[in-house]
Image (cartoon, rainbow, N blue to C red):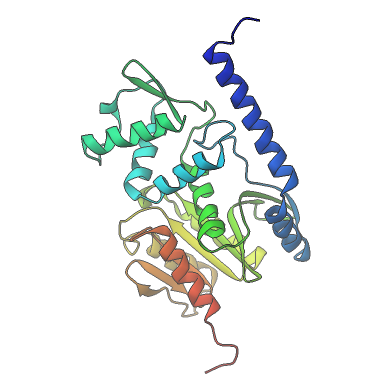
Length: 289
C-alpha cells in the first residue's frame, strides 16, 4: 500500500478536527441552552449564534489554536495588526501590514499566525487560510464573548439571532452574569466610522430587550468624549426631550448612563473595562441608600 503524501495526511487531519469540533458542539450546548432559555423567558426565540465561519480561526481549529489566538487578541497592537491582515484581498508581504508595529513585531505576529494555520505562506507572501473572512468584526465578537467564558466563567454567545424582535434580531455578544442578562454591542472600527444611526439602533435594542446591563464597547484607545459620548448625548436629548439624563464619566474613558448602560473603549484592556462595568452592576444596593 503506497504511503500517503503529507498533504493528504494534513487534509485528513483537518477533516477529523472539523468533525470533532462539530461533535463537541452537539454534545456540549450548555451555554447556548442557557442563553436560549433566558430569551425564551423574555418572549423571544433564540435562532442560534456563535458561527465560526467568518472567524480568522482556521477550519476545525483545535482548542490549543483557539487559546493561542485568544491570548494574541488580548494585545491591542495585535488587533490593529489583524485588521490590516484581513484588509488584504491579495497575497501580501510583511511590509504591507502592521503600520503601527515595529518590523520585529510584524515578523513575530506573522510567524505566530502561520504556526497556528491562520495564515499560509508561499515564498515571501502571506494569505488567510479561511477565505470567508471579510472583516475583523466577527472575530472581535468571538474574542469579547470568550472574555466572559474564560475570565468571568459566564455563559456567553456571539452573533446571536432572535425572532419576535422589532429592532432587528442580531446581537453582537450576550452573556449571563450571575443570572443577569448582559448585552454588549461591539465596534471594531475607529470612532470616526461610527454613525448616529448605529447609536440609535443600540438604544432601540436596549429598550426592547431590557437587559440587566448594556455595554457599548469601542475597540479603540482614542478618547470617547470627542465623538461617541457626544452622539449618546444627542440620542438622549432626542428620545427624552426636556429630561436631564446625563452621560457621566466613571473613570478614564469609561462612561455611564444611569446604573446599567455603559460606554467604554479598550484602554487599558477590554477585560478590565468589562469587569469594571459588571462590578458596578453587581454592587448596586438592594435598598436605596
